[in-house]
Image 1 (cartoon, helix red, strand yellow):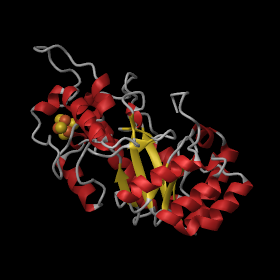
Image 2 (tube, helix red, strand yellow):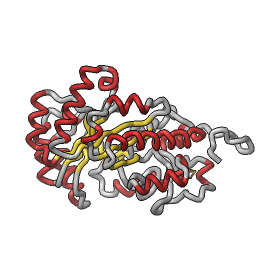
Image 3 (cartoon, protein in one colour):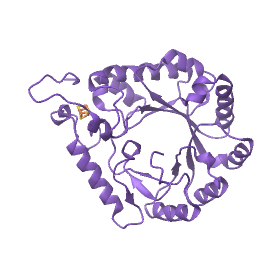
Length: 307
Ligand code: SF4
């Protein structure tokens, strides 16, 4: 959490307000992110409240649990699905912690559905990573592949000129993990755009059920912070926040998101036949990526363009 004024954990009264709002929208399940949500001081109360109101919890976690937390999660795990963040520094660089992490993930894979979440970088050593997690990949239900989206005002980790090589890296990764588990569902996050992939790669992603309804940044979704303020997404966490207790907060967020998308749409998207908001279309890159993008002046060659 970047903003130090935002509390580390959501209070139980605020959680009750949030649940009431979400139920009003007919939301079927709830996703809980952190930081690390299993560190909440009233974790059992949080779980019980959520399970009393939703069919299941999707819990995003680093997979490092104390004995007490593990016992608590076991108690409710029939209705908790885990998304394990696979590439935290402690898991990557500490063999003892990595082995414990793998055993936790294996344990919960026998009780419920587990998703393995990988954020891909250009420097990602696919063989090494797949080898590192070879024991758990065959037991996962799904793999979530994230792009490393930047924070607004930060640096982009790749250029538009590297889009195709990033897409190829994703395909190579999918092939490698499906060699270990050919039933694995694949999910690409909102950082992936249509032009990262060739037509044949898009066809393959479609066959695998990996490409979503549309590419890029989905309109109308948002994250809610511990203080009940909504933000469009994590990369815009230092941008506009809207109090979800206010009546028209959702339309305000959507309007803000669409305005930013329009204002910061890279020039290559303006003439792209794939651009749009309908099914199978592409809204353009992560908004923060577009904001941080340094484009050449008109008339100069776009060194980072794919066209
Ligand atoms: S809209 Fe932009 S990001 Fe999406 S496919 Fe077209 S050029 Fe690529």
